[in-house]
Amino acid sequence: MAQHNWGWIHLARGKPRRRKFRRGHAPYLTRIRLYWCDSCNVPLTEMKDCSICGSTPRKVEISPPGDPFPAMEGHLERAIATIDAQYGHGVGKLLLPSSKTIVMNKVSSLDAMYEIVVDGYVVARLRFDIPKLGYTFLLTLEGARRVGSISKRKWVSIHDGVLKYLKDGANLMLPGIVGCDSEIEVDDEVWIINPDGHVVGAGIARMTGREMANETKGFAIKIRDVSDPQLPLVNQRIASWDDVVEANKTNLSTIEAEAVSFIKRMVASEDASVVVGFSGGKDSLVTYLLVERALGESPPIFFADTGIELPETVQFIEDFAESRGADIIGGEAGDQFWESVDIFGPPARDFRWCCKVLKLGPAAASIADDLGGKVLSFMGQRKLESFQRSVEPRVTEN
Image 1 (spheres, rainbow, N blue to C red):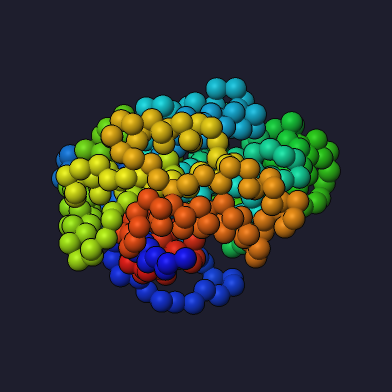
Image 2 (cartoon, rainbow, N blue to C red; image 1 turned 60 degrees about the vertical axis):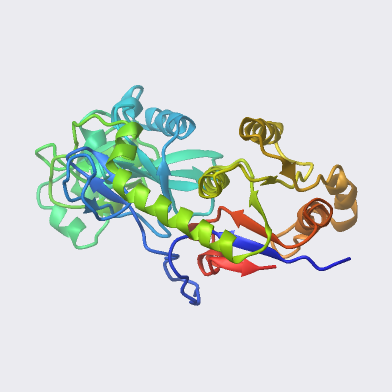
């Protein structure tokens, strides 16, 4: 078989930096880009003046690697149901109102966990707990202040003078408790108030509410966050995702112009057929639209049907291709996965036989049959997807 060069063009901005990753270190893959315009109450992608009001934004402190995304309907429904189960019916919609542009950020955990950003502040982490096969809403201090203003469940009141010890790093022991919600169970997420009723902390219950009321000593609350009393930083400004686009218009236009210029340069420098790798996801969709704009025409779509794709994915790709008048190339694996799994066993991170059988094989055959030579393939990949992709160069050759 003839050798075919496949140029993979990545649209990530900036030059990659080669670096090593060590265990135990925060996974910073690239600069974290999340800022907030308090005047418009919308997220921004750069520390530049808001395109709507001209205000200077502030940085939002989120955990690395820092890959924030809009909270979609399904995310919010799950979070709201979890909040209601913990703090009472109706609390979820008050804490995560539909009138706000809410952002989520995936963070490291044993399973799925997401930071939830409202009004430019992390109010909680939504974590899937494997032992109970369900989600838990882990309050930050800002989240505790907000929950404390709208809920009467999972509260713990402390004696005057206890706060200074908590601020020094101590956990809450039983003698320091004045009262609490009697319905608290072990491992519940609780919020802590001082004698004046102001929220000063958040943590995890290590005793039940009944034990706190009846015992005289013991380890009651594992403290997560604590500080002097402060009102919740609620922004009353209503905002939509259309507002977010408008607020980021200047920066998005700059990013788009640079990407289109890059595509034109690559196409001009290579004597090769142009295709766009397309999975049906947001990254490949954006990449396709950018390439289409740069070329002034709709390029072919490269999609390798592995035979185990969701029917909705295949249907979307076919519908999209039809809407653009674009050809789909890439080959089909058919039933090769099911025929091979009995021989090789389940695929694993260190045994990715499925990639060769379902993707590389059909892809190579399609390139040879449909394109007949060197191919310039544009792929929508982001540095924040993985350690490996964070150090990949913008242009590679296969």
